[in-house]
Length: 173
Length: 173
DNA sequence: TGCTGCATGTAACTAGTTACATGATTGT
DNA sequence: ACAATCATGTAACTAGTTACATGCAGCA
Image (tube, rainbow over all chains, first blue to last red; front, top):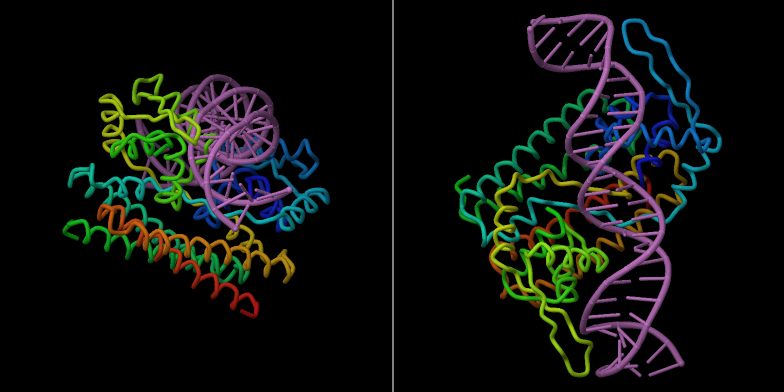
């Protein structure tokens, strides 16, 4: 999976602007695939050149104009080709776990800071996911809803383990 | 965290060759940071130029010679500077969850394949982690042992959820 | 007066991956 | 005969990130 496949997946439902796409990323798959504007805009341009999507400029009043992209037949084929391609293993990059692994070289203050920062990040994510669930859950496909639930369960799991790691490494929690 | 910081962390304990370092990656932090030879060797070269490590050629009988790298004072400082630097959020890249999210566009056969492949990967990882635990657990620092236990618990969690996702999306499991 | 939201993009860089390339030894 | 282990590396590429750059509308 790369950013292009995911954008094509979004455009399977409805045409969107780069800005819409960014919001869609943040509200749906950001827990297992993050995207930035600097990744999205060049990707859209490239996909337009390749004939996978078409651009239409929409004039708005009181807001900047926007480029709305729609998927083409070639784009749909590319998306289905992605679904057919062999799936790849999940990749995790955890700075927290790397640091914790080397914990014997760290001061108690450093350890405490890492745990606190990580907890804050996870808790914020947890709140965000619950909020998303409340606001859009009934409009989701069963698959989308399940990935959201998975995200919530995963966050809860991480939080519990973080607490365990804190306790076991002598932090007062 | 980048590959250099992790290599420095390994070399804090003992000098190692690129090959040793690769094995160390695979046996310890591969669940939250993967590395390949093509990443390790250039990194070692760069770190040697920067004076963070020194190289010593060790002649072996019946085996190729190896370049053994040891951390320098400057290297230790760089490692401690890493530990002091602000920690970064965990990044997950899950092809499986992206595909599952777009499940409404997939055939039952595709879904089944994705779930099966993912299960095989997780189960293999689970076996690997248990094996690692059996063979080296007593030689680990408490921090290393805890990250290993976390990995095992996390794998179990993923497996349970995978089963749930399979059931909920109409797969016979 | 300043912040947030809407909206788009480029330039320079970094950090990796994939594929290629080699070769001896040990075990099955 | 073949695979696995030990051992090192380069070249070309990809896929992103960070920082920079702009500007209007609406709200407080």
